Length: 112
Image (tube, rainbow, N blue to C red; front, top):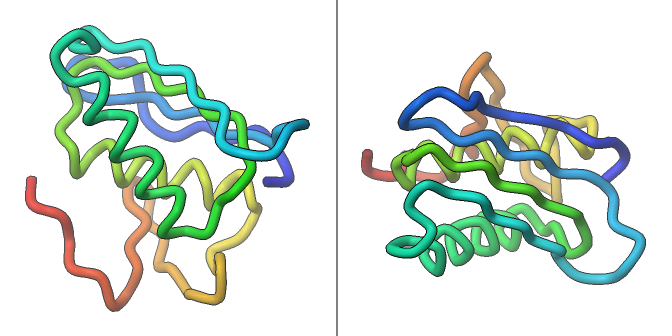
């Protein structure tokens, strides 16, 4: 990670993800969610899986969830990570970027 980056909004059914460089190894993750009691573990798993797929091993991540679906969370994490890395090619894979989504060309879209 080179810079702090944001993806998403604080609107209902969306999530804002902030990712930036970390001073310590590993993923430092903070989750604030209106559904944290019910889905906090699932949110953490999705964030960590998505970052692992991108090859991110060290980052500070803040997730402010307003009830987003899993596919939205994955898209926001991907977008923020690529913005923080200042590239559309991460971990040896090229990604297509649009205003809302970052999609690996060989990966199926997650169900929504």
